[in-house]
Amino acid sequence: MYNLPFTRFVSLIFFALLLGFTACQKDALTEIATKDSDGLVFSRSNGTIVDIAISNPDFSTLVAAVVKTGLVDFLSRNDLDATVFAPTNAAFAALPAPFNNAQNINNITDQRQIKMLGQILRFHVAKGSYTAAQLGNGAYNTYKTAATPFANRIYVSRDAANSVFINGNSQVVAADVLADNGVIHVINKVLLPPTDDVAQIAIKNNFTALVAALQKTRLTNIFMMPTTDATVFAPTDDAFSALPAPLNNADNIKGITDPATINTLRNVLLYHVVGGRVFSADLRDGITVPTLLSGKTLRVALTGGAQVEGDGNATGSNIVLTDLLARNGVVHVIDQVLLP
Image (cartoon, rainbow, N blue to C red; front, top):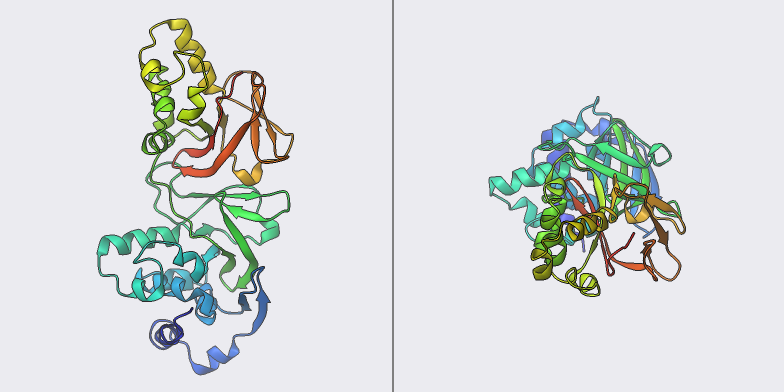
């Protein structure tokens, strides 16, 4: 359900007070209706990105967020030249309060929350105007403040059906809504900047054996470095439990003293890491990807479910959770340790 009275109120405020539009200027906006795959209606317009957002009730939460964070002037600039990945109301509704709807956002008074919301919005605005056809796979710099080397980047991927995904799990559901100062692509999930590195994701999600293995092989620092940019296939504790001792649990791994065993464990861990960011949408059946273990590759199999196969494994390892975005990479969770 959309808060239509609030939308009309915001529209009046924008046009009368913030944008200074005259009635004639408003009437001059030409709109062509277009529908996304879910039947939501958006419009193409001669106006700015802000004008288009105001004209569509499916963006009422986004409009409230733009007003609350003081980004109206920024997104109305004639020289902006940006690509905006615009979340729908339904996308915002999946967030916790007070970010889940227009009314709650309008009532925010905590300056820390307002600042955080502003950074999230800037994370949706890529520098340069790109239509869907011009959006190549890879990284795009946004207007978010960059605290670390990759803190302001979003990543575009395409699946086998050529659907466009941002950061692996937010899909473009309506493309090429053209504005005078940029291009809008409508997405079905809000993009949240990552707050943890790869090692912190493993720690916070109780990958105790993996964390112990990283510490024992002195690889932890690599996966905490802001300059690392990698894809990690992370085995669960249950995956490690299928290995022979002393590699089968965190306590046994912590007790390893034999240098040869530690070196073997290090090689096994490096075999789980691919340079650069490979999202689930990038995976194709039968492709091989090089790992950080010199000369060794992993094979991807998508028939009957997503799997990654190690040379030393009798069966493939199921990818049970995908696209955990880190500040320095992306993590996919697997149910079997990969053996080179």
